[in-house]
Length: 60
Image 1: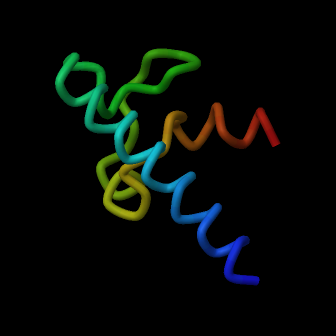
Image 2: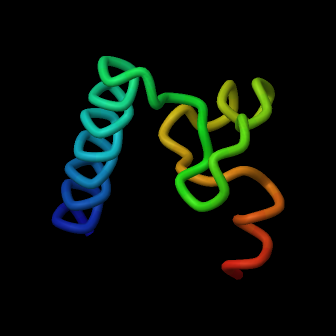
Protein backbone atom coordinates (compact mmCIF):
# COMPACT_ATOMS: atom_id res chain seq x y z
CA UNK A 1 0.00 0.00 0.00
CA UNK A 2 2.84 2.39 0.80
CA UNK A 3 4.33 1.72 -2.63
CA UNK A 4 1.04 2.68 -4.29
CA UNK A 5 0.88 5.91 -2.29
CA UNK A 6 4.48 6.69 -3.21
CA UNK A 7 3.77 6.01 -6.89
CA UNK A 8 0.74 8.33 -6.84
CA UNK A 9 2.80 11.05 -5.20
CA UNK A 10 5.51 10.66 -7.81
CA UNK A 11 2.96 10.87 -10.62
CA UNK A 12 1.53 14.04 -9.08
CA UNK A 13 5.01 15.60 -8.88
CA UNK A 14 5.55 14.82 -12.56
CA UNK A 15 2.19 16.41 -13.43
CA UNK A 16 2.98 19.49 -11.32
CA UNK A 17 6.39 19.88 -12.95
CA UNK A 18 4.72 19.66 -16.37
CA UNK A 19 2.17 22.31 -15.34
CA UNK A 20 4.97 24.60 -14.18
CA UNK A 21 6.77 24.09 -17.50
CA UNK A 22 3.57 25.03 -19.37
CA UNK A 23 3.33 28.13 -17.18
CA UNK A 24 6.91 29.10 -18.08
CA UNK A 25 6.18 28.48 -21.77
CA UNK A 26 2.99 30.55 -21.73
CA UNK A 27 0.85 27.51 -22.51
CA UNK A 28 -0.69 26.97 -19.07
CA UNK A 29 -4.48 27.09 -19.10
CA UNK A 30 -4.89 26.12 -22.73
CA UNK A 31 -6.39 22.79 -23.78
CA UNK A 32 -3.81 20.45 -25.29
CA UNK A 33 -6.45 19.07 -27.67
CA UNK A 34 -8.34 22.06 -29.09
CA UNK A 35 -6.30 25.02 -27.85
CA UNK A 36 -9.25 26.70 -26.11
CA UNK A 37 -8.87 28.26 -22.70
CA UNK A 38 -9.49 25.85 -19.83
CA UNK A 39 -12.07 27.24 -17.39
CA UNK A 40 -10.51 28.95 -14.39
CA UNK A 41 -12.67 26.93 -11.99
CA UNK A 42 -11.42 23.69 -13.58
CA UNK A 43 -7.81 24.81 -13.11
CA UNK A 44 -8.53 25.76 -9.50
CA UNK A 45 -9.74 22.21 -8.88
CA UNK A 46 -6.86 20.58 -10.75
CA UNK A 47 -4.06 22.86 -11.97
CA UNK A 48 -2.42 19.91 -13.72
CA UNK A 49 -5.32 19.28 -16.10
CA UNK A 50 -4.45 19.23 -19.78
CA UNK A 51 -7.88 19.39 -21.38
CA UNK A 52 -10.98 21.57 -21.32
CA UNK A 53 -14.19 19.97 -20.09
CA UNK A 54 -15.45 19.29 -23.62
CA UNK A 55 -12.29 17.56 -24.82
CA UNK A 56 -11.93 15.61 -21.58
CA UNK A 57 -15.48 14.29 -21.90
CA UNK A 58 -14.79 13.24 -25.51
CA UNK A 59 -11.71 11.33 -24.36
CA UNK A 60 -13.65 9.34 -21.74
